[in-house]
Amino acid sequence: MKQHRLAAAVALVGLVLAGCDSQTSEVELKSPAQKASYGIGLNMGRSLSEEGMDDLDSKAVAQGIEDALAKKEPRIKDEDMIEAFSFLQNRAEERMTELNKEAAEAGKKFLEENGKREGVVTTASGLQYEVIKKTDGEQPKESDVVTVHYEGKLTDGSVFDSSVARGSPIDLPVGGVIPGWVEGLQLMHVGEKYKLYIPSELAYGEQSPSPAIPANSVLVFDLELIGIKDQAAEPTEQ
Image 1 (tube, rainbow, N blue to C red):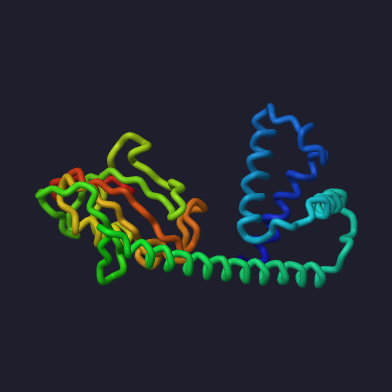
Image 2: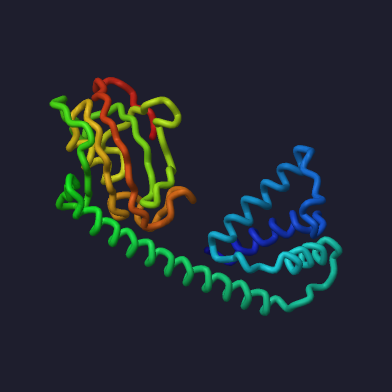
């Protein structure tokens, strides 16, 4: 996280706070501008919290915005602000490193225990799977496009994505998805249903694609291989 990013985030939150009374219940959220303002504050607050900035002083933020708009002299020196930003940046990075380490250790422990269960197969790569429904259909190759239904969860059971919930299967290139899927799909036969347990290194690792998927997460997918598309068919994005 860069200093200018932190400063911009704090400033944006301050703009929202500066226009509000400390009694949040009295703030009106009727007009599009009011609703958008609330949405900006909510999203930025969540972002700051995720980055370890959950102890910012909202009154101090609002005071800084008020002084700037009134063209008053800053109450602290530039070098003091730079030092403070550096402190917050370093602290946030330390927190994130620790959280990533904890997530990786928790994922490793989950897979160790899960691999002992009857019916769970662990491949050489570390991918784990269970065959929920077995068939003798055709198996896809990495160059194929397949039609699948799926539901993705974290190890705590929280769902982060689901074609099942959307009520529509999707087409995707076998070779164009995360490594755990590339391997898992090629193990399956058309018509089969698998449960995949994907180590973080075969998923997204430390590069989380969404706040719903924390870094270093083990991903659990209920996956159904519905069919293999004709090579001329155009895949849709996952």
